[in-house]
Image (cartoon, rainbow, N blue to C red):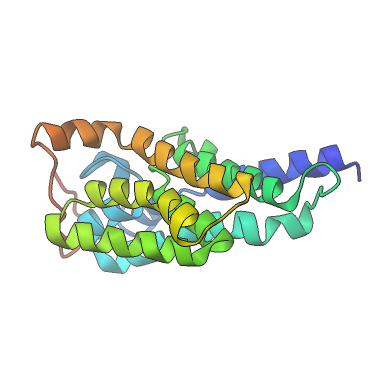
Length: 217
């Protein structure tokens, strides 16, 4: 098959994979709610944990990360297109397509999550040690402040810094991905940033979960 078509199909596959709205489907299938109408309104792992508890949240977080990892680690084997792009650029394109799918999922009206978990999955496939370092930053910030949004923002900013200075990455596409990840998280958390500045951001607290037919405020 022509490499142009392979690349196009690969992008579509990555987007459709990223579009799988894990939290929305878990909420509707098992709890009869739309997670986007509760808590922060975000279709992501953190809001799922906050509203439905860890039992629902852990699988959601795991699969959101898996989507990004699979887009980079598995899809290039099926849609290589290496005659068009270097492997790094191909990974970058498929990873970004998955993240865009997560934030703007076609299956549920293009209203998805903020992309942190899926971005982490992309990073985990490409540079796991830098992601683990950023994860450490995230956990420290959240444990101290109890603001998940603040932890996500600072971890995202630290990620390209770890890449460049701690792990001395030299690949321009990979460094570009790190910088993009930081900017993208800042963009998707722009409302959170405003609330943090105004002292209106909610601190993280886990509910015990709700009954399948029980609604939350």
